[in-house]
Length: 104
Image 1 (cartoon, rainbow, N blue to C red):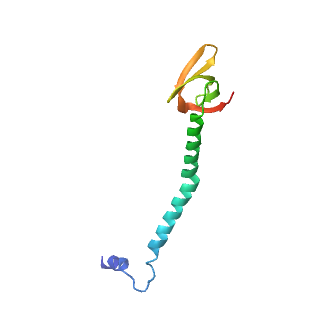
Image 2: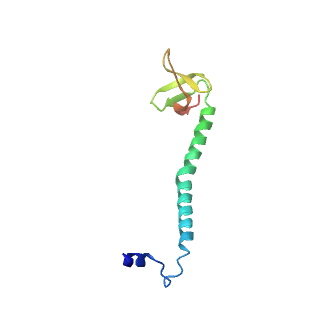
Image 3: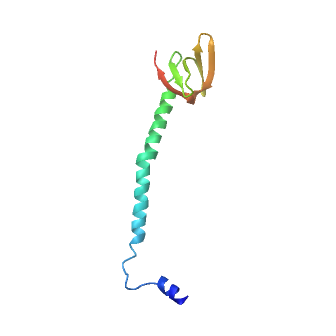
């Protein structure tokens, strides 16, 4: 057993291994920066664009929902939208499900 303990002990001849912790910190920071610029930042930008998009919806706009319904906005409130999908057929949907629209 003493052979194993000796093998795991400090080796004074190795020297210069103190910089490894700094390299680990730099590596972790670089990975975080890559994730931020490739994943997090574009997602935040898309979310802001969608929020602005939903704020600009108006009656008469032709929309497409995430479920695939095509219709025209007939009523709008803070959190929901009423769309007419066929003549005299109206559906009330969550405002966040609107993904695309065409101004009229």
